[in-house]
Image: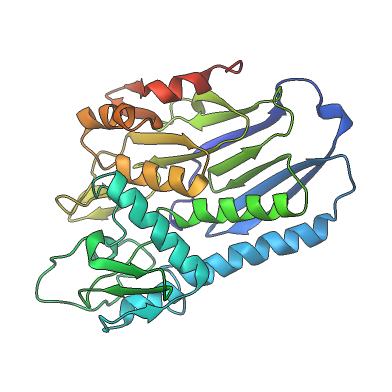
Length: 331
């Protein structure tokens, strides 16, 4: 849900690569979402009420925005961030589910995905303004200082100055919600793209969708094609959102281990997963990891990941074992 420097991240080819498409009607729905744009392509044998579906999709986007946006002072997460209480607070269903998923990915990545780095980004000029936030004597917290109570559907923070940032997962979560909605009305052939976070669903197992990944060096339009049937893909790039801080350009990606923003603006991580929220959070967290560890970590945890680094005038691409199969349309 990053609003600055709208991400180009992934260009999607709406061309299905194998036969069978011509028997279905195509519908394309688009609009604005989270400071970016969204596209939903639907294929159906039955007549689709495009206007009603668009209204419901935009209701989903609006509801997540008023829950998870760090740009709105009136969002649910902004109100929680301003609160000085360290007691459990009852929250909405979707905020709880986003935080629950965030906690899972934080543990999986050994803390490289950390939703409590919002104060670091604010202090260095990200978001619209350098907003005031509750200041403590010392910054001594991590994602482990946000506690969830499933029984009460409540959350609490152990330090009053914790500022939660959900920009690394909220778009992916919204994609999953829209996918669930479409399936609930018996639409099973679709492609959803919100600002580069994408989910593909195809009933015909012989059909694949080609997704083209942007070139972070901007020397070419794209650097790699991948092929999906029933998967989600998300990409995080340090070149997408950056500011000048103390005469140095820094990216929006923060390394939670040293609390420094990544200054290398030529990095890109793409993750394929069945769940878009998971792919989104993994891409955000793992791009902050040390170069030498990213692919090894992905291989140890069976994560389908591509890592791209700009070195001088050339690009270095590395693939995890799980990712390689998506380079072949016959997988």
